[in-house]
Structures are given as structure tokens and as C-alpha cells.
Amino acid sequence: MVQAYILIQTEVGKATSVAETIAKIPGVIQAEDVTGPYDVIVRAQSDTVDDLGRLVVAKVQQVDGITRTLTCPVVHL
Image (cartoon, rainbow, N blue to C red; front, side, top):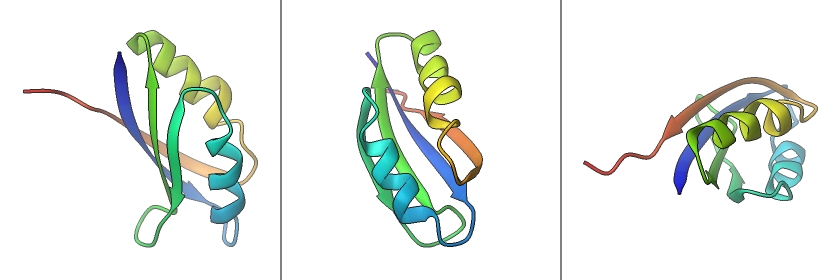
């Protein structure tokens, strides 16, 4: 199982609707709107790194109102 945080910047005023929409995507554990340099932080999981990439590119980045994403895979050192 691969988990990652996805940091998202949105258009002004879109953070809440983006977080609500992303929270419904299969593979998303949690999606919350936050303050700071990013507007939404998502915790997601998938079976493989490739599946994670497909989740981000094919589903998360397609949500209306997103301007930029940064995916940070969780590592266990």
C-alpha cells in the first residue's frame, strides 16, 4: 500500500468545493481545506506508485478549480 499527501492550490474561493469533491474520490482517505500556501491537503492511498499517479492525474487534477498539485509520498525510514 502506498500513501501520499497531495497539496493543492485552488482558484480563489474554491477550496471548500474542491475538498468536498475530492473527498468522494475512491482512494482518498481525507481531504481538508486549510490556510497557508496550499488551500487543500489530501491524504490518499493506492496499491502501487503507478496507481497513485493515475489517481492524481486522472481524477484529482481533473477537479474544477484546481490550479496546482504537489504529491508527497509517505516513506517509512
